[in-house]
Image (cartoon, rainbow, N blue to C red):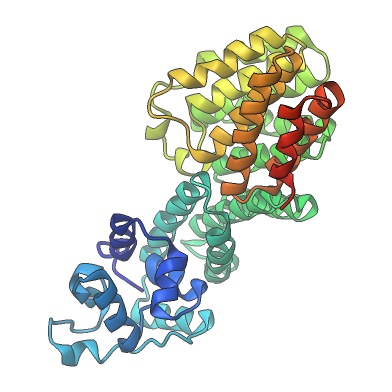
Amino acid sequence: MLKKDTRGMLRSARLAKQWTEEFVCGQVGVKLKTYIRWETGLQIPRLASLEVLCRIFSMSVVELGFLESLPDASPSQQDVEQVPVDDTSTYEDILVDRESQTEDTEEVLEVLAEELALCWKEYISGEQVKLEILVPTYIAHLTRPTLVPGPDQRVAASLMSQAYQLIAVLELQRGNTANARQNGTQAVVYAQLARDWNVYVAAQVRLATIFSACKRPGAALEAYNDALRLINAYNDAISPTLHSRVFAGLAEIQATMGREKEARQLLKLALAIFPTHPEDEPCFSYIQYDLSMLYLYEGIVFLRLGLTKHAWDAFALVDTLKPTPNKRIRAEFLKYRAYTSLLLGNMTQSCIYLEAAAKAAQENSSELVFGEVYAIYEHMLAIWGQEQRVRSLAKLFQM
């Protein structure tokens, strides 16, 4: 495993070149899964692959961040040839190698916490395929410290819950709702074991989101209420960001059920308690709830209440945000703006946003959003099916 100060140097070098992981692994001649392990520090390239990396990047072993990970490393070629890890190593081999290098479980968990935080950033950046390969490896590595009682068990269980939450949302984006619910439930169980109430609330929020996507508002309401009961019991221990997120989710469910007064009250609470700098809170790494998401929920609440113009104004607030929202949230805004334009009877605007939403969903590998965009297109066909501008959008869904 690479040291913490050298992990990410290969990735930085690739991003500087504006290359994809697929391009680099093709140049080196290894599988994408292997290359991702190099970038995340789970595996060290063998000598032949290391030489190719140095050649294509025009950088040294030190500049790519690998030399410091070797035992008794020095800049000599002889030391580089002593790399003990082969590209064909299984994850179990890497696991054993990690444990042989350090017996400090606390340090390993610290590294895994940092890597999971990076995974959440990759998720909101649309790195679906990469994470589907990578995240299960964290589950494998966390199993032992999570299940064996000891001083590190609760920390490991907290990280295990975060990993299962990430797998749950990845499954949801693929449209695998049954798997998403199963992994979401696992996340709740491990959060209980950890007695990490911020992670527990986040896990319940994740489960509620999955139920909402499955058109099960009653089950979503139950999950949000479980989170709210914990917030009431441990108020001072729960992050304000999570407070706001739970209130926003409850507002959406109440609006879905036609309870306008309750929905508006909860939305006001979500806005009132939202912190000035949510990114400074420890839970932000795995909840990823910022001002853009708050505006998104505000628009959804108005949409559910039939207040279409209010919804449009709320969705339009995204244009005022600096920096701009991440790729996944952007896709959600485009989808809802397409639908709101449809409700307002603006065909041209609806076509523009629908095309952008479909392309954004494909970039994120989100079959869930892509399917929802197609459902909007079916509504558009029912209203403007004779219009060439609308019919021409069919090409977006013919692949």
